[in-house]
Length: 224
Image (cartoon, rainbow, N blue to C red; front, side, top):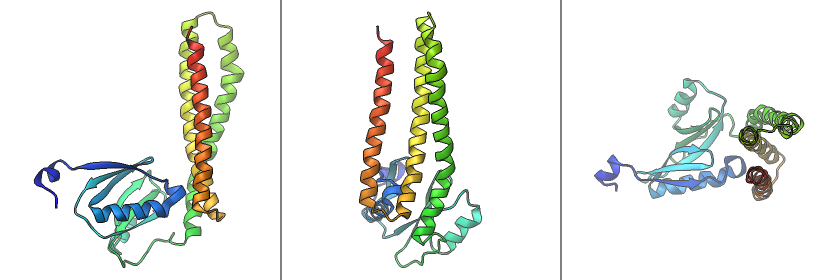
């Protein structure tokens, strides 16, 4: 039972998500366990799940994929016993209900659900990848030769810092969207969740090492 102070100033905690694209069922089980222990999910920011201390409850969780649904969608879910908890961006929606509530989502079938999710990430993954390739071509084909011809070291340093930031931001977005798209495609192909997570864990590590090496090289070149 919560005290008056806890009601006025909520006690929160943060947990790292296993990744809905990689281990949806695992995260939903964790949310159900936390709810029974008195931790209510408030929102999901990236890979961070923010929970708030609340009255323990026995509930089930479900995810549906709808791109920018209208208010009637959430009203229909509520009328059927599924309370909207939070949404990720505008296309992944998390609901909860008491045990025994009938599932109503059109994407209950796993294949349909993963197909819909893969389609949602296809365009962002494509355009971010194109943007990354174009940025790298411009960097090494245009910017770097131009910088080598400059005498003003201060200006060169500023341009290199800006270029590094732009490349890292685009690369991060490209990796994130492309990996999500690929993860759902692998789920459709029947790849086991553990194998899926292992593969992407290795890829994330490799990409992180490459970005870290690039940033380290850029910083090292700026130090006399």
